[in-house]
Amino acid sequence: MAKPKKSSILDEKFDEAPKMPTMTAVSETPVNLSAVLSKQAVYQPFHLWVVGDTPLITHAWSFKAKHEMLAKQVKATKAGKEQRDPQADFVSSLYEMGDGCYGFPVTGLKNCILSAAHKDKGIARSDVMKALFISAEMVRVRPALAGAVCDMPLLRIYGGDPEMREDMVKIGGINKVANLAYRGQFTVWAMKVRGKFNPAVITAEALAFLIQEGGIANGIGEWRNERKGIFGAFHLASAEEEKQWEKYADGKGPLPVPESYKMAAE
Image 1 (spheres, rainbow, N blue to C red):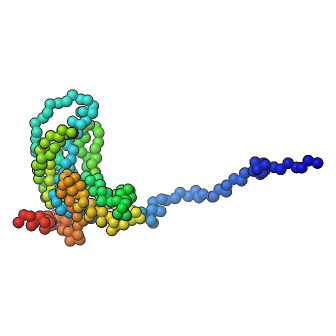
Image 2: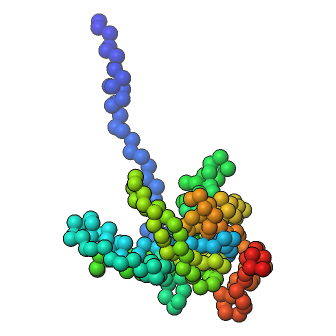
Image 3: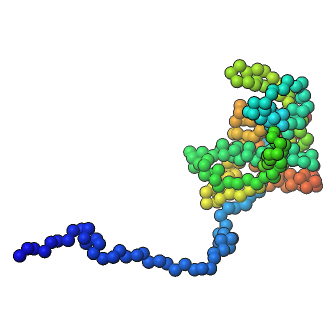
């Protein structure tokens, strides 16, 4: 009598119908995500003042420069070289915000802070980039192409009026040519900075350290320490300095001139 044939593994696998996974009942009531976030806020708001230690040099893209760049890209007929106007260069270098006020790109300050971060310091640059947001005023500037929009996120500069600054610079590619540059300079200046950060990624103490470190090691604006200069250096304001600049910003106090500037003027 022949022995019964053993079933193969495949036969055993399909002896029974496959079992369907158990479905968990889902409530039809929608979840209010806003209420969930309000109970567990992720980002912590902050505000502070940064005070300039050395003059700030601004160099905004002028409409003329942007228009020439656009004309070159669309292969438009090149116009003849216009006569140099130092006053126009100076005015064009400023980031105007209206009402006689001026600003500075918020991206410049954030990049300054990021430059001070490094994984070897225990604060990775990529982590800070994702965990830090700095608020800014959106100012619409004149674009090179009519009909386009260009919104510039700016931080308001508090301090003295801008002065025309003259510098000897070299422009061009391999064969650089010496030229004179006329740009705006803010000798006494400060900025009120607001934003938010993720305390699960970066602590308040670490953020304060990066701002202080970036202000000296990197700076902002033209000819800063990061670019072999000394301009655009700043520090995190003390509690007393904050009070002085708040009063000045509200029109209730004089311009807070740092002691280093007072000594230089004597």
